[in-house]
Length: 307
Image 1 (cartoon, rainbow, N blue to C red):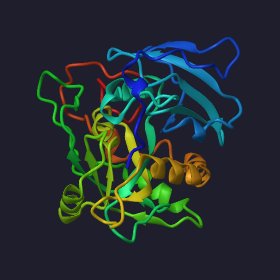
Image 2: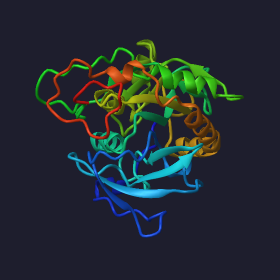
Image 3: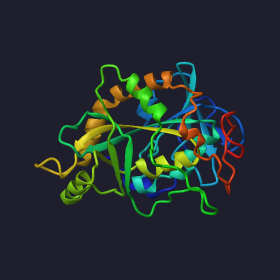
Image 4: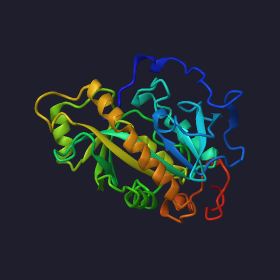
């Protein structure tokens, strides 16, 4: 399950400490410059040790993203790292500025998004420390803004929420890690954990793992024609699966911390192998649609006009 946030989430964000001389660099969303091709949405532990890192403060029509965006070179690729909850974990799942986050990444030139996350297991064989590469999603959130398109008739295809190219790349680079290929992520509102009855009902409807942040992140990526790949780390068995005690805040933090190194190695290997010019369905999600807004960032040759 997604790591819960602390009570500072309702406070205005503070400027982050800079990893680059002279502080973070301001970037206006939609200025047409390509600063990164790939993004990783995850905590600072995934990029803290990288060299050649610079920070960028990105403004968007939807307010600021969760934090400054750190851009670094990995295997010759420029990669943008954005902490989903903010560096100090100020944003709980239902308060994350999802629209600003995805818009900011696209405005920097990003087209591939890797989205590691902590999840609960809804199957007894998926215990703490397991990795799952979901291929389906069930949305059980409420009250979250789910779209950039509040006017017009813009209906994106979301039958397969995750990028097929990204999923194939993760599986090919897993190495000695066991990664379950496929599964349905149930996304709940949070920030509380599930009751046992809820947990059992999610498993009965076909859920494999449970999470609080995977939606609307996935659909917003699709609405911007971004390739989006979720990599789930199981930190606990959900309440309806195990029998002794419910999920605890401490357990989630502990297991995620114990596996950060394994997740980081996998992500860096995947970044090196992602085909940046893949002509996958995600890139064509907006083809033929009349958009009421202008999508930010430089346009790829394969994209239809107006993207």
